[in-house]
Structures are given as C-alpha cells and as structure tokens.
Image 1 (tube, helix red, strand yellow):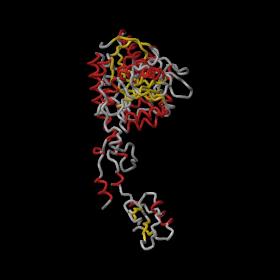
Image 2 (image 1 turned 180 degrees about the vertical axis):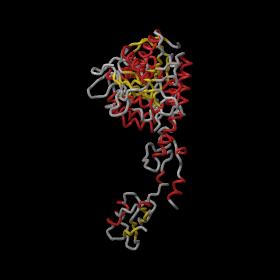
Image 3 (image 1 turned 90 degrees about the vertical axis):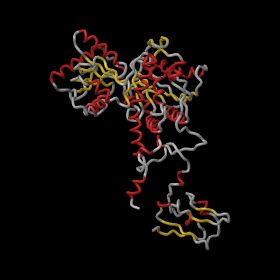
Image 4 (image 1 turned 135 degrees about the horizontal axis):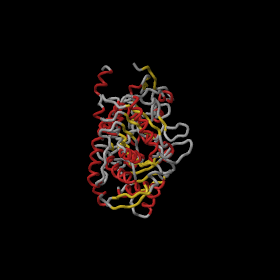
Length: 99
Length: 396
C-alpha cells in the first residue's frame, strides 16, 4: 500500500468529533505500534525456563503470559527495545534486524 | 425596559447576573479591578443565596484549569480575571476553547505590567483574541449585566460550544455605580434553561479529552475549530435579538451611530464609545456629520457588519486602548485593516492610541481626532504610524 492511499482513507476535519475528544475507550487496541520496530525479538522456547523476567520487564507490555507461565511475544505492540533479550538469564531471546 | 431599576457597579452587576444564571461552579482568583466580582459571588455562596461550589484557588492558572474540568463535567461555570491574571491563564485559554468548554469569564480590563497599573487598558482582552474564545465588550454597567447573561446562553448553545469573555473597562465600569435594569429571576430562568452538556466526563462512558494530536490530526482539529467558531455568528445574532425582544434593549454585533452618509467615522471599543457619541452629537449641532462605530461582539470579528457600517466613510480613525509593539498598528486597527482590504471601496484608515493605564479620554481628545480625520480626508493621505492622544510630548 502506498503512503498516499493511507492518507486518503483517513477522516477529514468534517468527520471528527468536536473538541478533539476520542469518544470511545481502548482505541490503542486499533492503533498497532509494532511497526515502529527496527529490531525484532525471537524467542527460543527450547531454552526458555519460564522465569518470567522478560514478562516483568517488558515496558509495553508486549510479552504475553500463558497459563503454564510460558511466554510469547505480541508483535502487534512490541517496539523492539530489546530489554527482554537483555534480562533473559538463559539467552533464549535473540534480537534480529526486522526486515 | 423590562425588570427593575437598581444601582450597582459593574462588578456587582456581573456577579448578580452570574447568580441569576444559577451557576454550578465558580472558580476564581481575585485581582484588581475584578475583585468585587469574586467577593460578591463568595458572599452569595456563603449566605446561601446561590447554590454553587466556590473553588478558592492559589492562582489564575488553577482557576481556569478547575473551570475547564468543571465545565467538561457538565457544570455551568464562571470565572473572572484581569491583566496579569489573564496572562497567567494564557495556556489554559487555548485548552478551554479547544476542548469546547462553555465557561463564561468576565475581564475587568486592566493594563499589563510593567509598571504596575491597575487601571484600564485593553491589552489583556487583545491577548486572548486568537485563542478561540468568543469576546464581547460592554459599554456600560447595563451591558456588562446583559452580556454576562447572554454569554452563558450563547456559549452553551449546542451549535456554538465555545467559552465567552465579557470585557468591562477596569474602574470605569467595574467600580462605577450606575443605574441598571435587572431581570426577574423567572425571566432569566426562561431565557437561560439548565445547561445540557455534550460529551460530559462520565465514569460510565470513558472518553479521552485532549489526546496527543501530532501532524496526523492536529491540523484537521484546528480546521474544524475554525469552521465551528465561524458558524457561531448567526447564533450570537439570534440570541442578541431574542434578548433585545425580551428586555427592550437593542443588541447587535456592531453598534453604529450617525454612520449613514458620514464621511468621517471614529471606531472605538468599550466605555469610550459613549464619549465619542457625545462628541459626534455636539458636532452634529454644528452641522458636522461624524459616525461612531463600536463593537459589542469582538470575536468572532463581525467583518460583514463592520463593512456595512463603514461603507459611506472616506476616513476612519480606529482607536485602540493598547499598543502592539513593533507592529504596523494596534490590534483593533489590524482587524479593521484586514477586514477592509477585501472591500472594493476602501476608506483611509489611521490608528489612534489612547487612554492607556486608565488615562482619561476627554471629549476634547475626540474632537482633535475628528479634526485630524478631516485633514486626512482633505490631504487624501493617512499618517503612517499610530497617532497618540493624551500623551505628554506629542500634542495632537
């Protein structure tokens, strides 16, 4: 999709609610921020010891915790800061260049 | 005239109107010459005459911030200020208008520092002119009362939803005792029904107010705000007319006196308009026809009505109670210039600066301005720079 066609799809000033309000909550759910990312964390489940340090430290939080304390990465919101890879004691997360 | 005749100064008249408007929240900080407004309202709340929350704040910045929050929650809100107090409110002025609150604020117009001066200038009103607030200028105590009531009605109209400023000249109106007609409470109640908020703050229906708005949306919001303020014009007129019918006191955005067929016109805001009309009447006895134009509605600027009022004039003296440093003219002069640049027939304009810091503007000063306007007409050339009247060192 070209940049121009995205702009054409956006609302015009005539369509906006008055006063610059956002009349519904949780609009961040529609606003995926994963495309800000330059580096992408890749998790090796084989190495993971379920210590949850990545889950605790993720500032987003883009680490999703399963019932069995296993983790996966929510790429819709992960901005690639690399903190998870840094705190992982068993080096189960590797930062790779997003392509 | 509808209502009963009472004697009040301008500040008390505003406070009385606010009481009759049955406001829910007053959030204000006292500053001369507005002090009496806040004191009187505090008294009304304290003695039970007015059932409202009075928020005593530590500064004007907080006063307006609290007013914004209260207005968004659905309350009818009033605040008042002057001079440096308005300057301290400045950043919140934009927020109040941009969030489409319906606050009504009285400004006891006062000169800005330095040096400290508590008397009348219009610097403070002009400083708020670009922020998106509606602005009205009262010429006397009666108008201060009337415009306060009308401001609530206009601001809270769902087709408007912008905050309003009612300007009254510091000391000249705020402290001058005049006779005025006040409406019965029941008349006010009928004219000004309970506020019906739009999108009020409600824990059951969460909303975001004042979100981050970068290059992707900010411009659209500004465009929308611009259009909305423009579309308030006919509604202001409508309310003026309704109030005129109710009270028998005529209100219109532009007040013109003897402009029909007058080649020379004087344009002026606030309490001095009466002095200008007095001079025009005196000169009319001598066979001179001098038009006087004053504005009741200052923002949105009533350009169309002004062009109509000015159409016969060859020369217009635009009088400002303010200085705009380094600019080609003071604020009203620039508004009028920009308005007339679009007309095919354009009078010669010149700017007069008068009355700063409460200096008296006498009929003799206005006569001198009229003389100058007549010589401008003869020469066909207007002074390049603003002309100062009543200042030592420049004898006009």
